[in-house]
Image (cartoon, rainbow, N blue to C red; front, top):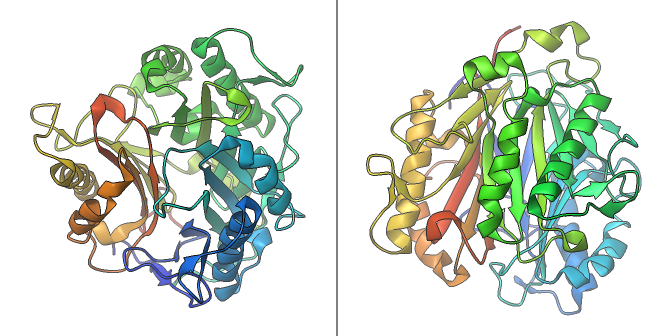
Length: 421
């Protein structure tokens, strides 16, 4: 473990236990919770019932994990909802609303092609605040700041931005004009621009610069639209003269969606550094904390993202394709070789910033064929032999460069970024 802060990995028998992931991995002021399928922990079987029963079981599992570590659902900062059929969303929302009645988390909803359990219709993961921190930090009653602005679309079941400690998480932004409440006219370029305008409006409403974004998630209905989206994306990043001088771009993950809410072509969410922190932290710290962006030639380079972006006590690693950094081509072989290359790339990035794989707290895996998961898991176990990270796995119809697998990660950063107190 790099730095003095200790990663705390915990499982509870009141939620399903997986041999390849930890239910909850806490580090510093956040807890990362593995994706929860609608499995009854007592039986290990899929819950009997319709989409409402499945959604309730996913959320009951998250609640059990949250409560097992002496937290409450109000501490949830972010939720990802992965569903098989977007038409099920109203039923899911009906259940969802019964679990979050006060400070709503930020939320990203995506329909995917497959989930790890064949008959599962929905899966959810979560990020929760962790005011007590992890040893040797002293417990601190940090305040979660949940904020909306009318300058971006407002949703009754999510908050636009939820800040806690030194991070802001922003809900996935659809290409909705906040004045009309409708999807903007035009094609994917116009939609991508509106998503990013909405993100920018949210950040400006809380006086946070656009270049404080450390990680971007792009969800596309058609992966063939990525070049058009990138054209628009490059007009937003870098945003400031300082960022342009150092060519700063955030870490990034691109995912193909089976469908997006409101039949959108694109949806974008972001993670944002928050130098001023949340009370009772001192506001004076705001502009002194440094974002550390790092690339290594030992992993594939891209002009559109940075391989790893560190801020405060976390490092965000861009999604890694199974690309050999020397040839810049997809490696030969099948999913086994491709999974190995993705993880080798992540390992090279991790080691380039003087960390180890055990510092990883969360892993996200996209698979073209969910039936390949057993093979990927065989490879995966060779890279994680300590405290297992939290994990989310989904099946998608397409991955960039016709890859069979793509993997991204979040890593603990015990040394933090300046200033150190």
